[in-house]
Amino acid sequence: RTAAKPKKEAPPKKDAPPAGKRMKDGYWAGGVKMFKPNGNGRYVYDNGDIYEGMMKEGRRQTESKGSFRTAKFIASDGAVYRGQFSTHRFHGDGRMKLADGTNISGKFVQDRIQVDLHKFADGGT
Image 1 (cartoon, rainbow, N blue to C red):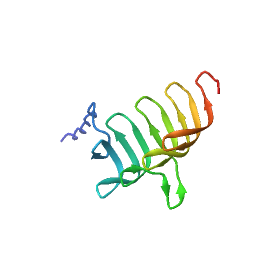
Image 2 (cartoon, one colour):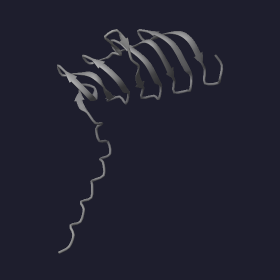
Image 3 (cartoon, rainbow, N blue to C red):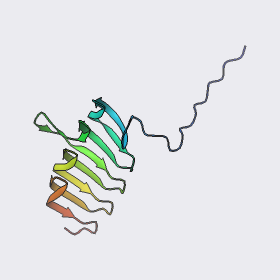
Image 4 (tube, rainbow, N blue to C red):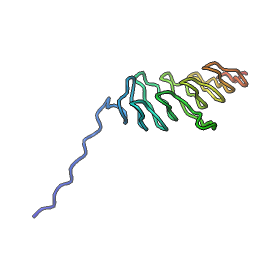
């Protein structure tokens, strides 16, 4: 009697979809309520953007019961935002690093920065 050979695991498929439940514009790995992303999780959008944080009724939202949490948004062009969101927009304290290395930090209001510090990639402010 010979020992059974262990089965080889199949390599992951190239272009395999991200983990999570298929939504209208990407994949959500997290809670779902009324068929929409809800709670803490990760959303990988079809365009390559990635959001990691809280969702409320399908929208990026970091305020919960009066307290604010931070979340992370990685744009497909390489820009990264870490901060607060409200109704699917950058809203509240946040920091953004653009693909060219430029850093922006301060208070964002409906996706617009109210600049506290803007440091360009070349070191200028």
